[in-house]
Image 1 (cartoon, rainbow, N blue to C red):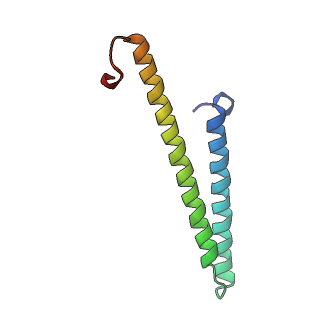
Image 2: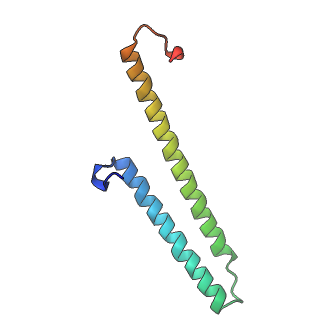
Length: 93
């Protein structure tokens, strides 16, 4: 596993946001569980909906990050192939 200081800034930012969102989900979920056990008459549906929204945000963030990385890697690979084989057309690569 790469050390944190060897990672690019974009990866570090995604990790920080992911840990923040995951921490919020864990703390919020724990609070809902404690509240449901000790105060069963309290409505926790809005809090559960907020946690679900946080999870959707995290999934969207990670999917966007992976799509960006994939696009970046494909572009870099095509540029390298063009340098190696300049006589080929781009759509053949």
